[in-house]
Image 1 (tube, one colour):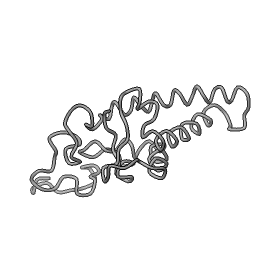
Image 2 (cartoon, rainbow, N blue to C red):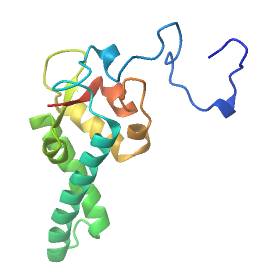
Image 3 (cartoon, rainbow, N blue to C red):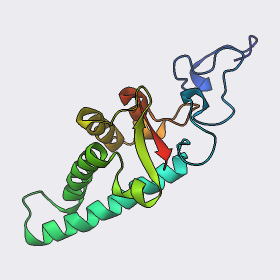
Length: 158
């Protein structure tokens, strides 16, 4: 922010240490994470990730509709959809490092701190935080949502 402008609430939110210094904005999303600009291993766009979530939601809705046609133990279709989506996100994120929607669109979840699997707790926390929508919608200059920053992960193209 220029020296003549003062920060106040009307300037909107700013993630800590987001825009400070001479090279405050990367040339492309994922650059600061050491990811390539394009192709496999590059940061997935916010739009692609949102489409992946919509695909996952559609799958969860279909499964929930089948479940609620037989029993109401999980509540109505909307509640069952949310529960199925959460379980599906946790299990597939943990076991395959991608949800079905991510797989369809050629994406996956990767840790940025090590070349190791995402793991159960990261998959669970990512899914729970994504379920609140807002953390996933707020992205930094590298295109990572707050849920990815909290779990030290990112969504990359496969």
